[in-house]
Length: 218
Ligand code: SAH
Image (cartoon, rainbow, N blue to C red; front, side, top):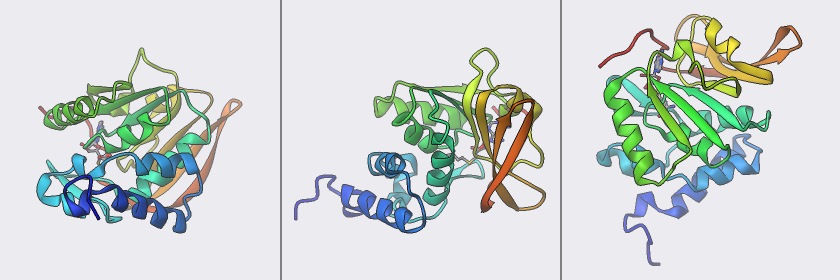
């Protein structure tokens, strides 16, 4: 059969298979599975790793960072989408893949990354894919993105020790923060929902993430 992508391992068929695998692993939101099916993950990793892009694993993206495992991206996107958000803030742009997945589902995606070369690379990829509703900023994402909030959903794609106060402040009424949090390498993936004057916390499971750090690296 003719392979439209010209490279066997990066084809639509592999994305379809990945979506099926994620569905079997419990991802139920059809919108999320469709976004995974239409986002070319192989373009968010170095070409030497492209043939592994549709395995359900994290992969290195340089600077000691990783593109998250597809199951984690899907689970976080599913938790984000429960709020039917129009504006989402992501902390930890990395490759830009999670932002690209969100861009299929949400009107405005704002994403903050602290490592300058990753910001440049993510911007270029998103531009090449003609994704225009993702805005990338170089900054310490612990601070959120003042002036662009409040956000219906804030998604943190790096592991936190505690909930960053500025991020909680930038969550809209009835909004939520999706964040891996805890001590040590293995974190609880938490959904923290604004609940009147307080917060309600739900745990989705254990996950491994690169750490949420402070400051900007140029
Ligand atoms: N969402 C990414 C996953 C990237 S891994 C993707 O789809 O590829 C986590 C990223 O968070 C890394 O790029 C790391 O540099 C970034 N990060 C860590 N601490 C941060 C902070 N305080 N502010 C912004 N980005 C941060």
